Image (cartoon, rainbow, N blue to C red; front, side, top):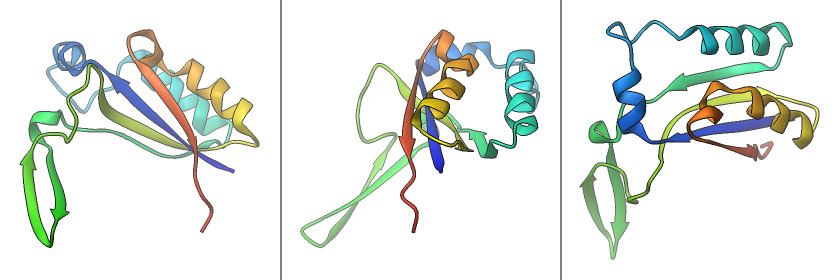
Length: 115
């Protein structure tokens, strides 16, 4: 079964903590990614650019509206994700609890609908 681990955090903290070379992962994320891969659980994952680079699109009454930034103002922003394979929700939650982002943010675990 596939699960999406949605990483939410305060991007003001994340952006400050980003190394000068943004292509380099922290040792904690390198170890986490290696563990997911070794277990055969990793399908995909990526960090997102900050919300200042986001554009939101919605259609109201047949008119397309383009908004700069995210749609909702929140204390935590969606900053990245992992798509994993796990036998059940408990196993997915176990993987989520090991993600380095849990130290400063929140991981939302959501089953993916098989289509």
